[in-house]
Image (cartoon, rainbow, N blue to C red; front, side, top):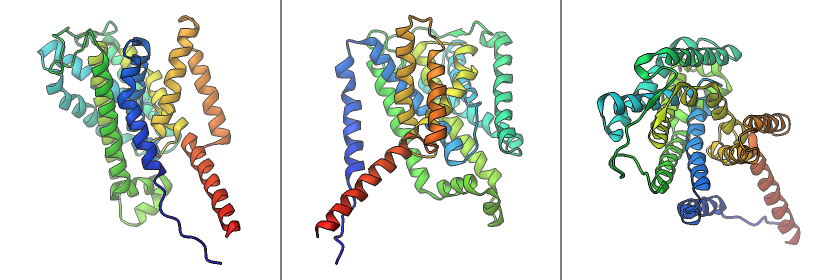
Length: 337
């Protein structure tokens, strides 16, 4: 019996186009609901941060819980340039990306000599050390922080006071650019080498490649993405302080988004952010601020469930579910021939 040939499925492309159209039109539905608009903007921002973590932690296999450091450095760089030197945010964006990138490469030189939980601890120690420095550094506002100047409303100044919708589209554009770049990276030689570092570092070294070099590249790309997200956050809230942009909770959240959604996958961090951010925001509303840590309990429960039942994350679970349905459908068609 000849098995019927099947054409490549177009469902992923169709689904992507549908989701893109929904995201583009979403502000029209929630324009008069500022809470939902803010939450949607945060989902996009945190998804971008999760994508940044995923380059190093998912594709490169180097688990970090100190990535809030690069987000904070990007935010502080943008804020200092604006407050101290009056630099336009757009002109300050390259530096907000460059400073975290250079710091990440410098940190990676000693830290990548460590493996496993020793590397995880090292990233935590470095991030916490920088946090402590910024809390006592008067030039950057110490623990009080810096308040960015309010400028005329408009795209040129990256400030929108009456209507916050442009922030949403800026966050959406940033996520789209980062996701496209990571997709291209995943298809490139660099993407294959990063996965080789994750899967078998010694085998890669035996082929003449330096795992240290590719770890550093992944760290640099990851930090650059977090730095851009930090610049956006600083301009969005017009305020930075060590607790909001350098706190350990940010590093943990960024990792959780990717792990829950599916680390090492393209859309895992986006799915993770789309689930965890609304959970966090609505739990705080439900408990009127008194349930500030309820979201962390929910996060912990979800991560335990994923770790035990679906270590490959929600994306892996969805892929297996759709794959089993396709196989069942193909089996039924074969029996009908």
